Image (cartoon, rainbow, N blue to C red; front, side, top):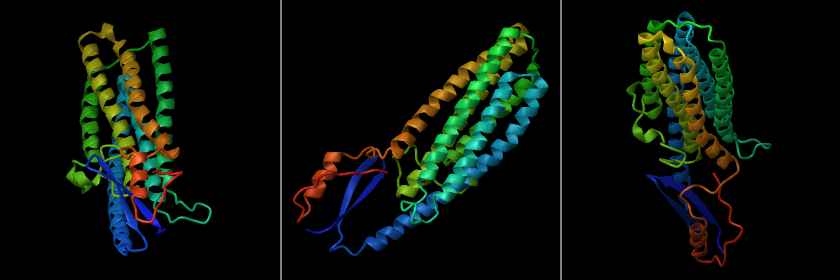
Length: 299
């Protein structure tokens, strides 16, 4: 019976299992080099996206802290806090993408690629903790009702926040020429446009960062709406903490899929879009293979 190598490839929304008989096929090196080239390119694109977003995020976070202090708006301060969480997430992701390129060691024979997945998990947990703090602060503000808000500054800062979050989203989505990338260089999820494990590992961090930016965009829109309400009727200043409640809940809701997919990868779940029975049948159809059993297939 001959040895067989299973190569899992997922692209354009479909999955396939390619089987190569290692006793007869001598093209493995070419395939391996091509995959490595694509993986390195994907990693560089991911790093560039994260670094650009990190710089934008840091700059506007400082602006929102100043604007939130001047306007006495909890909604703006909470938006700045979420930007801080995003910044931490970007830094974790950049570190994770970098460390995942390190060569395997004797103690870590599978390499460091799961550091990226762990980075995504830490980023999500961080924003959950921060969101809890913001909700508590909003409750205290409603209870005591001893605050005044400068609606004009709120309008300026929140309007700018919407624009900046849209720009960051375009960078992470691969639509911004300044990032030096094309649409094919990223993924719309954990299972799309894959060129190997490194590409998928980069994509999970880009996706986590993109979800964070999406949450901030929604919150910035909410701040803009509440600022408009307070501007025309100061009696409705309670819209400021209520805005924090609503959009904190949305941020939590949008980060659940990221955590779920990360845990699925860490638990070595069977790759999405690939059928266990299909792989088993394909292996058993190889000449010289009588039966395939105890099949394991992970990320």
